[in-house]
Image (tube, rainbow, N blue to C red; front, side):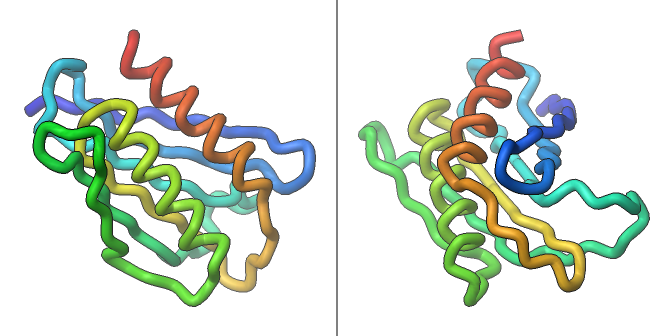
Length: 132
């Protein structure tokens, strides 16, 4: 069970930059080692305290194209819940691996990103990293 951790910053034209940290399996054929992604707005102060706002888990359902998912840490913020759910289920369906996706926020941070932009860039980055 070998993994590697990568990070990437996505510059959004409409909101603050989003930082993505992912732990990926080194063997692209492994279907048991999960993909873990933590998303959050890049802060000016790298030492600013962050809190985990949402954490979503998705797993392929047997040998079908369906995905079963559940929030492990839920939030009352709909856009955070939606973005973690979308990224987890799309990555699980695309890569056929279990996926954990979390969203971290600095205290008092309330910017709303473009969800489709974040999902698209996250999937593209993970795809590029898995194909290396």
